[in-house]
Amino acid sequence: MTAPSRRSVFLGRMPLPERNFVADALRTETTGGVLLLAAAVTALIWANSPLRDSYGSVVGHRFGPAALHLDLSLSDWAADGLLAIFFFVAGIELKRELVAGELRSPEAAALPVVAAVCGMAVPAAVYAVVNASGGGAMGGWAVPTATDIAFALAVLAVIGTSLPSSLRAFLLTLAVVDDLLAILIIAVFFTSDIDLAALGLAAVGLAVFWALLRAGVRGWYVYVPLAVVNWALVHASGVHATIAGVAMGLMLRCVRREGEEHSPGERVEHLVRPVSAGLAVPLFALFSAGVAVSGGVLADVFARPETLGVVLGLLVGKAVGVFGGTWLTARFTRAELNPELAWADVLAVASLAGIGFTVSLLIGELAFAGDPALTEEVKAAVLVGSLLSAVLASVLLKLRNNRYRAMCAEEERDEDLDGIPDVYEQGNPAYHLRMATIHEAKAAEHRRLAEAARAGSGDGEGEGDGEGDGERR
Image: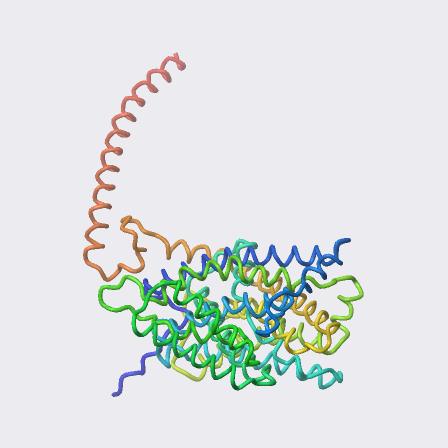
């Protein structure tokens, strides 16, 4: 008789090194997400206050050398320059996932890849259906396809929910694949006129960057100026400048060699991620999220097909797409859901993926660059759709928060105080011997306390009997 095929478990316990890496990355992203949220709120208040004219003046202020095609407004510098840092980190994340993370094997990659693809295809389809039926512009189909991991983690921090590491890692990997697809969308669909000379020079600059990395050359004073030159050349070529960041991030080696505690990619990501999460992305939000949100504008969000398509794409399309892709992967492969979780948990994370702030705002600016009024309305739609997705996800997560809290406590429990959670040491004989010693010491202490309590109880009984006799007499 043939043995039954072994089914793999998804959203199960992660290997300890991967868990620690994800925890560090998410800790930085959570802090950055809170700053991002604060920047977005500041921009909204500024743009809707009596100082709204000053916001427009600051955002529209132009500076930079025109001869190098860099005479840009402050908002353009934020979108093309600061987000290049964000996409540089995204490139490193993607490289690490491909060589050492969840995407390193086809079987492990199937779940997040299918979930991410469905999580982008369904919102695009929702947008297309709404605009086809309402006579709207199809150019914004890509706006609701992106997930903002920093903003999603900020929501988790604000609502105070405990999310198990497996769900957080799934959300992070989903966002990494999502970023890759967003990069491809920007490169393919939002690149118009190409300057072949500048593009050729950019290719040479990227090749030099790669060769220096392979030769083991070290020093920020070599790579930072070269990275700036490469960015400027890609920008001048007509390709969106953020592509330069992704390309250079993908070139870094993310596999550790013998004797290395961290790979070059991990070291650089550790240095640059705080700059990206704590400075670049919040500044982009400050200069991009300031849209008028009067009652009339909010009403128009649900009346105009372009903006309604964005809202429904984020709120409905993302949740249906990510959840549906995950369920289909489990249904038609040998993967099965972690028995400690339920499909309601996947739906909650899928709803959280509908928070599409940073890249959605960027794509909205690119999709409707020729129509400033519609661009502002689409930005408002991104804010509304992300807010509604955050509210929905918060409700779903709060319903299961007690279960999440128990799982997190179990993941963190370290009774032998060796710095390694106990769930990762169940197959280690030394761990069980340490625990036996600890429990034997506790048992001996309890026996001593029991003897002391018995002796004290005996003395007390004698005194109590005397008092009782005295009262009866």
